[in-house]
Length: 50
Image (tube, rainbow, N blue to C red; front, side):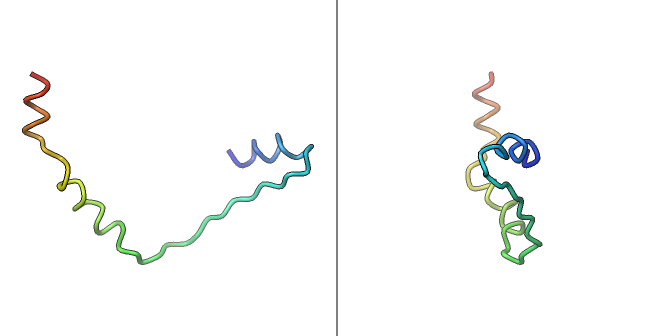
């Protein structure tokens, strides 16, 4: 996507770059799996499909 933007915007003097940060120990991945269970209700979903 960035390469396409670079080519498209070059004539207008716009430079496009990408940032690829390294891993950070924020705990996001550890908590992400837990968050699903706060809103997911498999029984309710099964009943709504019937």
